[in-house]
Structure formats: C-alpha cells, structure tokens
Length: 291
Image 1 (tube, rainbow, N blue to C red):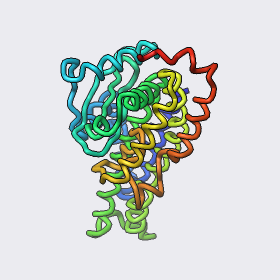
Image 2 (image 1 turned 90 degrees about the vertical axis):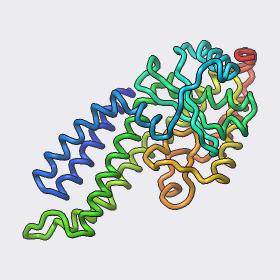
Image 3 (image 1 turned 90 degrees about the horizontal axis):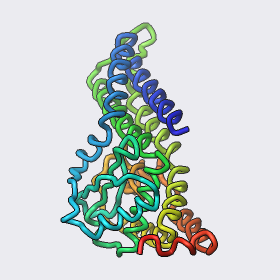
Image 4 (image 1 turned 60 degrees about the vertical axis):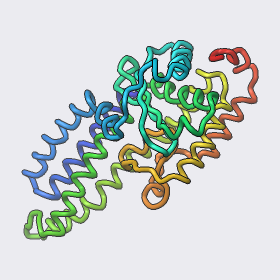
C-alpha cells in the first residue's frame, strides 16, 4: 500500500510541477517542467534522505559518543525486528526528531540537541520508538519524497512569482501569462502543503500506536509529546515548511504553518496513548523490553 501511495504522491507532485511549467511557459514550459519533475523523482527516491539530513546539517553520531542512546536504539530495534538505523544529531535548540531513508535497511534517525536536553531517558525512548515505528510502517520514504518534491514545487513557485513581478511569462490572446504566474505562485505551495497534510495526519497516529507497541510504554511517548509541544512553542524553529511533516511534532506555529498543519493535535495524540496505557493485558508483558 505504501508503494502505491509513494507513486501516487510522485504523480501528484509531477502534475503540479507540470501545471506550473505550463502556466509559466506554455507547452515548452510544460515539457521542461516534466523533465525537471522526472529528475526530481529520481533524486528524491535515491537521495532525498541525504538531502534532508544535509539541509539540517545533521552529523552522524558514533556509538562511542552516545553509548547509552545507542544501547537504547539497539534494544528497541531488536524488539521491533528492524536493522539498526544510522543515528544523526542536529545542533538545534528546538526539541524535535525525525526518521528518514528509503527502506528499513537504509534508515536514519535524527534528533536535535534540544530534545536531548529537555527529555529524560524514558521520554527519549518513547520518541525513538515512534521514529522506529515510521521505519517499521514504511512511512519514511513517502515522507522524505514529499519533503523533497514539495520543496522543489515551492522553489519553482517562487521563480514564477518573481517572473510575474518583473513581467515574465507568456502572453497570448487571453493574456493568460500574467494570470497564470500569479495562480502558480499562490496555488503551487498550497497544493504541496495540502498533499503533505493528507499523507501525514493518519500516519502520525499509526506511528504513535506502533511506537507504543515497540516500547511497551505508551506514557513515555505521551509525556514526551507534551514536553516537545511546549518546547516548539517556546523556541522559534529554523525549519523549511516543506519538511515540517517529517518531525515528530509540528515545528511551525502561526501563519501558514498553523493553517496547513501536518500533524494531529498533541492533546488528541496524548489521549489515545493514555487510553492504550489503560489496557494492561496488551502492555504488561512488554514492560521490561527496554530496561
């Protein structure tokens, strides 16, 4: 099913890019946009994880640097039946995390230094379990491709916006050039964000549930989410809107970041996790998984 979603997403993003190209440059613009979209599909499939990690200057972390964190991840991956992912650290005060990669054998988990500062061990475990759940549920490819393609669409839309300001675009009998540029500049980034929103909300609930099953401790993640939400509200995040859906909590607040939120409300997620914790028959046997 996730393969279908991935190719559907690629098709939607390609269509949006081609629409922008057609509006900006007519048939030639559409052909050029199709070539660009094809190249972006190739790059996003094979290299989108490296692009996103480089975007946030995430550095690989060795076992000798973070032995306790490594042991925690090893325990969780063993219980989840997953290979050990690569671990990255982002030098950011805002507390957050994400997983990326095209499949479980090429997965990476990135956490911020801010997250490591404000969460205790049990809460970090809950966050890591959530990110491993994205890997297990094979959410990471579609999420990373969405980030790369949406970023490309926003870049093309900005170019269209500048072209409209400085009088670019085609001019036919209906003077569609200027109107098309304005529409492209406004609609394209909104369309990209709407695609992200469509794929992200349900998968966050799914990752919460799977993460709770992996760790056996739903309240660890519930407590972490509450702290992370407060931290992200207090500290401005230097995050690209196209990648916001990848993080465990929405790093953007206010303006378009709130209007097109890619995450379910934290209270709703916490409520579900607390309800799961009240089912002892499901979780009691897993209490010592990561001790």
